Image (cartoon, rainbow, N blue to C red):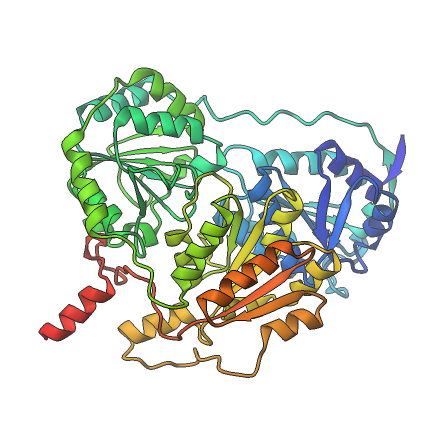
Length: 562
């Protein structure tokens, strides 16, 4: 049947199972928005306050559901406003398709009004970017975009369509989406054999779980693998929930703000098995002193990650779920009682501590208790992000959505809107610092307008907390431009945007606010006022090895002895 380009776009989205898109209209994309008017019973469009919010919402939708998230924007500034969200998705391997529309073909290259080469702009931060200038290539390109976004290591793809293509008419033929196969052809017998030998020889194995285990839905295979290897388990920020954080052999996050137990265990192990982790600098600390006594076995779908940051002794390249299933069938049951007992002693000796009174850790721990771990937690970036990772025990995958690679302040609120839209049956809570919340506070109006019952918790210390922590520890307490003491009242802002809220200054008030938030039918803001000098512990100084993690007590002792 003959359809115009805008209708073809929407029909292709329906082919791919898309039920929700996030976006903001404008002149160049107006034809698609006109078509959306007639598809409103099939595709739910959520209007955000800013295009960046749309990109983050598509990202949050994708992370929470495992499906492709879709966002839309017009040409010029509309398209460039997506860039931070696209880069965020790229760094964390999130499947997003961004659809933008550009000026007509005859106006390209003439510095026309709102013309930007967005396909060129995003080239370094997408798996692929397309510009469609021919109606005959439109359907094929959109289908390819979805396939690329989901294949292998997922990531964002941008499709830019000229305005004349969205208006042109062409014959549309429906197509069934090509299946997205798991990467198995790179798994070699030689690599598997070497991996099995390393595992069987090991007496002090340690397993590090990264985001790849979440993306591949490998939790079941991972649990079996951990049990057969009989090893303690640490995770990265992106790996949270792939392994049940309430298990006795779970040691917590690794790295700059990881637990001492995890950092010591990785330093002392004789085999470190990295499962879908990319050895970020925040995880490894000083790479020259990282796991020096250990062999490294690296399992990852992306061959580019092997030996990129840490040199491995063996590797298996392929989908994590597939690799673990094969290894589980080949390794013999191991038992490492002395090693496991040693690590459990560390856990008892170096627990994470919740300060007295209303504090960031207390707020997170109380949210965990109130939800019983059954919620999707979204975060912004900073101290609150680390407290969420430390004090909320994630038991299932896709329950922590956070910007790990890019560290995007302003990510969380849009992502939480997307997550709540994708999994409406789940309680969704975005945890933010006051600095981050200001970044995209305009999206509060979007959540209120769409009656999205998400909860926004602000850990409000009236400073840029993590930067202030660094200034305090490494910059002689010179607090340059990190103090936010002003008259902003987040609850009044929330009410002004059509939401509800409550200011919290005590533990008792927090419980009342949580009860109200759980009962709310729209967005609810909990503004938690905490001390400006509260810090995230433990910490590894930048450039130091992870075994030199220090706590507040260590710092006090060092000062008293100096």
